[in-house]
Length: 530
Image 1 (tube, one colour):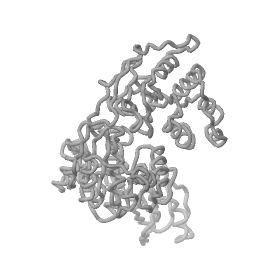
Image 2 (tube, one colour):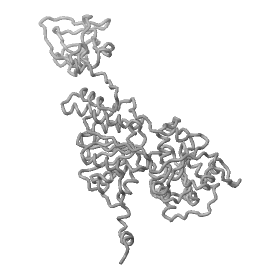
Image 3 (cartoon, helix red, strand yellow):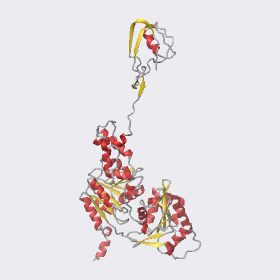
């Protein structure tokens, strides 16, 4: 008779069962009860598991859209869930496939218009919802949440927001029933290690600050190491320097397919178990080669750009920061506390490491500098989206200005955002006839276009017409007609003509008009009245 252990070994599925923590169970229960859920938990704590438990392997009722901040993460989630046999689609702007699947992985911008037009899924997941405060993309996140249809549930996930309770209050103000689930315990605790305390002696032929630091850390069993560099060029340069200086007793053997994907230059570094990682690399190189090797523990050092701190889907035992700022839109940006928290949060692999290590380098950034940031919206107004909503309101015979005010009142802010039409909506009858407040109306003038007529009086400029002579009356007496111009005369040996017109050019092409009625008329000279 086989033992109970042998029976368990014959059922590998039982060994893969993940027992959710109480906070994860609480979040799933709230979702199934129809509530919105805001989750605040550290990186690596298992926030994604909440959605996976709710969806039950893609067997959820109605469509669920799982939004992530980067295309790389969307592709990673797609590959992970399809590997489990789930029916999953993707929409990232440059890629759209199986859009009607029960689970759609997407960047939020691809779903924005759908949401604000009232076509929402059963569940909208926003991973890294602190993007609401992003200077470039925050307005898209904010409008999508503010205008999503009421029947769409929200699951908001983050590990770097200090005031998630304000987000819950905002959802309550929107008429939603929301619950905050907060979990502060890190599954892999962090420990600081100062670079100056690494005393392992390294050979003199290893030169340079980072090669010597990496060699010491690897010798102290702190590897593999993830180093964040300020920009792409710095990441590539540092990875090349490490590959040149660090001895490689056990080179990595790449398959021919992997060599083709990454190219010769990166393949040489990977052979030394070193790699760089940034958005300039192809998706195949990042997600198809570098990330799987890093997750499998096959690389000693990975140098990644700081801009991908929220878009890296792997963790290594130790993390070091090579700079205190990074370049964004041609401007040097100092690292914010929540960005430092996200980068340090990549230290420690759940299930592999008991402790994650933060290497304190020359810039002296440490755990005290890493903490959640206060979430607030950017001060801008999304005018393009606002004008689009106003246009749609006008098409459906609704007041576009009233629609604009309604939208602004639903944004994530405790201070009202004034567009200048609020007072006019309360008092629609105003002397200036314009939809603006009293203060701005003082500076408003309605423009009136006038002209000086032949009698020397000012009158409204008439609308130009193509027809010149409207009526011609023939008087019985013979007269000599003179056009009222200075020095230019028009003499006509014919009955007196009384010409009336509503055009500013009274005598435009009169020769043809007169000759048609009076063939014997002789015109000596012509000059327009005006």
